[in-house]
Image (cartoon, rainbow, N blue to C red; front, side):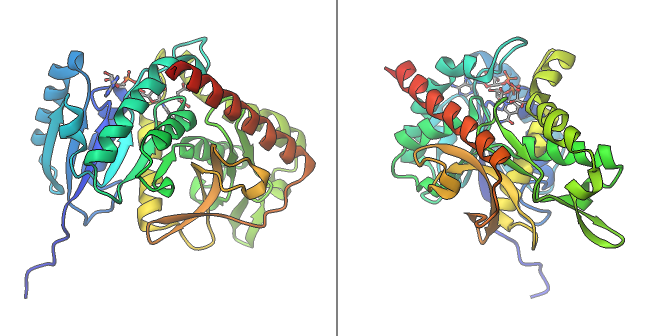
Length: 336
Ligand code: NAD
Ligand code: LMR
């Protein structure tokens, strides 16, 4: 027929939608930044009772924005209604850290939310739903969700370290004065915390004379091995200090990047960082949600294999794994 083929709408749940990341994220999703310009969606937004009015206001604004791709909005404080038949879940609901706190300081409040919401998702979401946990401590919340939603395939539960990955790209681009889109294949290993290891050993920049290693272009190894790493590790804290609130638009943008690449695939020759359930690759213990370099194809991620790991990297990768083991123990004690 002459009519354009219309795709079936995909249902996306954003938890904590009335918060500051939510306010940046839902318009990005509705504009097509997450699933592309031809994919209609139905948006479910969950928050808690005290946020009821603010959530209603957000729904009004979404309607007023007249987004062509947005085919329905459900704003609710009922977890079961929120989870009903959802295909993609972005879990932002929880409590952010404030100045002077580490991300694990928000542990006890947040892991109990993830335990409770795991069962609602397990019972009511679409069987193949893909989950991205954003709320901190992101890796450990995702692990708790996985443990309390055993029927969701473990490959479908991930956490956000794409913001750290993008921060690393941003720092290299600023340092070399090159387009951020010409920098690729940085890696963020481990926890979304100050022990994460942003690794540039395999990163390259596209130049007029081909692909060049970041290490060759930057020259200053001292900057790469020290200031670059701590800047990326501490960027969340620097933003909290400056804004008095944690990062929001960059977190929302990274969440869109994470889901888009997962669902639609990573570009040829490129990988991205995702917090995923460890299969023991690179000697990282199983039983943790750990950030690895991954490529995605047809809705599946795969850990990039065979990268050479030097002693400097090894120590940093193990240190952040160790922190995740400790967080896991702490999370379990919070739930008892
Ligand atoms: P916010 O306080 O502005 O919003 C959080 C929202 O979650 C609030 O509206 C709150 O009412 C809601 N909420 C609380 N408990 C809930 C529950 N049980 N169910 C549903 N909703 C619930 O916080 P924010 O700045 O939007 O940040 C949200 C989370 O994301 C924080 O944990 C923050 O630390 C984290 N974060 C992670 C990254 C990352 O890269 N992984 C980046 C930025 C922020
Ligand atoms: C970030 O990285 O900006 C977020 O995780 C917020 C925080 O607590 O640092």
